[in-house]
Structures are given as structure tokens and as C-alpha cells.
Length: 515
Image (cartoon, rainbow, N blue to C red; front, side, top):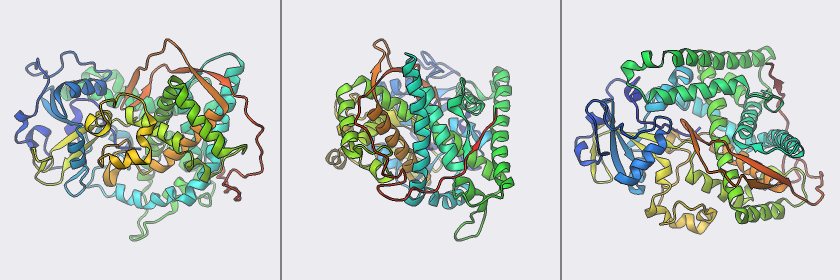
């Protein structure tokens, strides 16, 4: 649920609050910022561009043009930033705020003023944030842990069957099933039955459709979009309708059951009032927040897990070191407790290093609250904005060294973290609008990696080369792994799943979805 947007398109100004200005209007000395060569009249910097991979295109230009550069596409100018000094400046909440534009603004027809897509002046994001924040407390997380274990067991059961049949496993597909079921069960008491399906759940298909359409809107001139994307627009409308109907049915089922008593995110949305104002979320906003959590709450985490498993398979020594930590910390306990997950410090470093190289929410935009100067170099007027390219920020040699392209989890040991400047690792966005579910995602992903490392040896396809799919978020394309079941010590079941010797937390009732 981090802030994210990719692309270089024309939807940037659509839906902006009155008084906000375009990048070109807000950068008085735009001519000082480099741009790609071979700029064409009207079309701009489109030669050699691949509209299917705008983020990777932007990374390529970043390497050539430096830590601040601009691109013009169909008459609109966009400023990209990735230098550590510049990103640190943009993280200053007194001078900069989240900017909703590009792909994020394109998602407003489905998510509206949800936590992720709300404009800063809209009140519902703060209301929802304050109401839902207790849902990510330590006590709440300990309760979610039990259900995370249950969903992970469904994944390993599926992988055991694939292994027995001599098949490789579809890593991105199975991680998507895992994370969708996890957020659906922990947040909303719902079961999509993903592991019992041979094809993705229709909700996932509709979600991918809306994300892909939002990306495509960035690749065509806004006035021509209704004509060039007419068929895609009809499909997108149908996808949005499916997402809305799915969520409306979920809410109706909760209300029909009397509501309350489960203590999950949906209960908080329906029953909890703001601690100071007494306000409640409106029914429309509840729908938007549920969609936001279901989509953002699983899409980015599934990508993070997929990249981490890719790197573990490619680096067997790192995998063995991580596995040894799991064996040492968890011992012969069948179901690791909530507190035991945080003790997997090296496994967490593997996850962080994967998010460094390929943050699945690969960019975030920041706008000036008032006239200012970025990094003492570039004047910006109020409302001017820039897009931070997170994968390039995470590769800045000033912060990460000359070997920044190399996968090395030890970059995240405590001493190395303290030695780096602040604001150079931003996979969850920054500031007041950063991802509310960060700790949820990190706990889930660390738990799952520990369980999989303990159970399997991971072997890559020797011919596989990492290819990135972009649909606003990032995912490895076509990643399959061969599994080998480990010979492990017999585990005991004496420790409850809810914690180290503590009573197991109560489970939320789960409602199975039909077709």
C-alpha cells in the first residue's frame, strides 16, 4: 500500500485540485534540467520508448541524464528525481506533500478518496487513517499471525502437490494467491478459495485489468484516449464494476451477520468512530477503502515475495545462511509464534535487499507545499511536483556504493544502516501518506520466507533471466522454481500458533467465496 506511480504519460493533470499547476508551470528554470536527446515536436521524448515498460525506460534515462532530469511526452513535461540528496529534500514534510498524479490519479475511478488515491485536501484519508491505524497495532498483528500461518499452510500444501507431480511452481501466481487470501481473511473474514482454483480468482483478473488500464492511460495523449482505448475502456468499466460488486457483497454479508465482534479491518470501517470527532466512514468510502486494502494489500507484497524467492534461488549461499537462521531461531517448533518472526533478522535483510533492487511500488510523487528550492539547486513554485524513481534511489552509488547493482543482504545489517544517510530506502513511500500496512506486509513476507526456506530447497531454471512486468506495480515475469523437499528434524506442536508459549489468538470467522 505504498505510494506508487510509473509512466510518463498525459493523465498527470487530470483531476488535480484547483490551483495546482503542471510541472512545466511550476519549475521556473526547467531549461537547466537535462532531457533525452532527439526530442520531437509535439510528440516529445518518445523515440526508443517502450510503452509496456515505462519504469524501466525511466531508469535507463536516469542512468544517462543524472539524478534530476525531465521528459516531455505529448506536450507535457515531467521531472524525475533519484539522487539521494534530492530525495531526502523531498521527504521534508514541512515543504513537500504527496502528489496524486499519473497512474495513481488514473485509479481514482475505482478507489476514489481511499487511503492510497485521495488528494491531500480530501478529509477521508485522514479519517480512515485514524480509524484504521489501531488495526495494525502489535495486539492486532498477533491475531493476524494465526491466519497468516493457516494461509501459508495452504500454499505449502499446494507446493507439495506440485513437487509430487514433478512440476515447477509458478512463483508470482502462487504468491498472489497467498497474499490475496491473507489480506482477505485477516482484514475482512473472507476466503476467495484461490488455491482451489485452476485460474486466478475473477477479483484478481479484474484487479490486474484496472492496474493495466491505468498504466496504458499514461501512454497515449489524453484527448485521444477515448478513441484509442475505446475497447480497453469498456473492459476497465466492467472490471471496476466487478470489484465494486465483490466488495459490496462482502460488506452485505458482514452486515447480515450482525456485524461486529470480529475485530478486523472491516469491523473497524463499519463500526468505529474517529476518537476525537466521532465521525464514521461513509458506505461509499468503506467500499473504496476495502478495495484499496484488497488490491494494494496483496499486489505489492506478492511482488516482494516473488523477487526475494528469485534472489534466494539465484544465490544458494545466501539461501543457506537464511535457512540456518530459521532452523536456529525456530528450532523444532511446528508453528512459529508471532514474536519469533521478528527474530529472523537475516531473512528480513533478504527481503529488504529484494525491495531495494526492485521495490514493487517503484515510484512516488511529491509536490511543493509552497515556493521552495530543491536541494539548493532547483526552484519550485507551490504545486510543482517531481517523481522519485525508487529503484534508482536505491541504486545511487553515493548512498549504496559502487556495487549497488549486486544483491547483498548485509547492506541491511545494523552498522551498515546507521552509516547510510537518511531517506535513501523508500519501498513504502514517505511521510504522512506512507503505507499504513507496512508492518503487516513485512511480518507476512518474513514469516512466509522463513516457512518456505525451512521446507524447501529452491532451484532456478538455468535459462531464466529476470524480466519485469509493469502494471503500476512490479512483478517478475515467468518466474518458476524447482523445489526439493528438505530433510528436516521432526517438529513439535506444543507451542501454540499465537505466540511463544502464549494462548493462540482468536480466529476471525471466514466466509468462503463462491464462483
